[in-house]
Length: 245
Ligand code: ATP
Image (cartoon, rainbow, N blue to C red; front, side, top):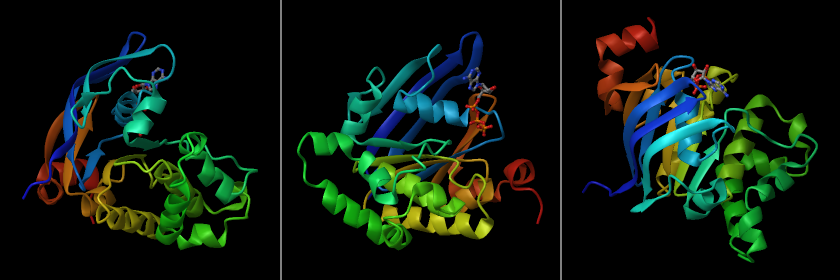
């Protein structure tokens, strides 16, 4: 059976003042799926995620529909989208370097704590099970972590909000291939818990290996889409994004 559509984006456009960065993007995400958006530098990948999250910088505008579980969330504040189950790991990880790993994680759940939801402790256990390395280092300042560990912490913090859709902006950025594989393996593991992931990557090869379905974004437009295995075998995509060897 095909899982139900969780998130449906249609005709999403975004601009920074006069500069159009995203043009009528349409994509969807099903429960438990890993969907990737690949594309070169400046294609509009971060713009897409930020527009979906309501996190575009001031002065930028977006139009189009973002329907999450049947509800149009496209005009909502970031916090309202988080409360409904969307969570973003931004390209700049935005960790607090002088705070401990654990306190950074707790920030990801501040809203739930404020509302007296005790479940954040279970969610913290869940994050520590997924990333044992973070548990070992929970009392360590975030600024002393390795690049890979910082990325794990950024993902862990996003998971503290107990999202149904996790959006990742270039998790492989600045990481060694081995560390990238480790992070992506954990994303795969997350799929089995029912969390859907939207993975934006310049590293197309790694992304297509872990994804179920993919979209190619070029100059603000989605130019092709298909099952990840099909995209990974497409001559033009291999040539443009996967390089040789
Ligand atoms: P990268 O991988 O380099 O981050 P990307 O695919 O994520 O690229 P975006 O960062 O979304 O691309 O940028 C898309 C386009 O929008 C680019 O032409 C970029 O110069 C422009 N852009 C992005 N942010 C801003 C901004 N704050 N103000 C003006 N233009 C912007």
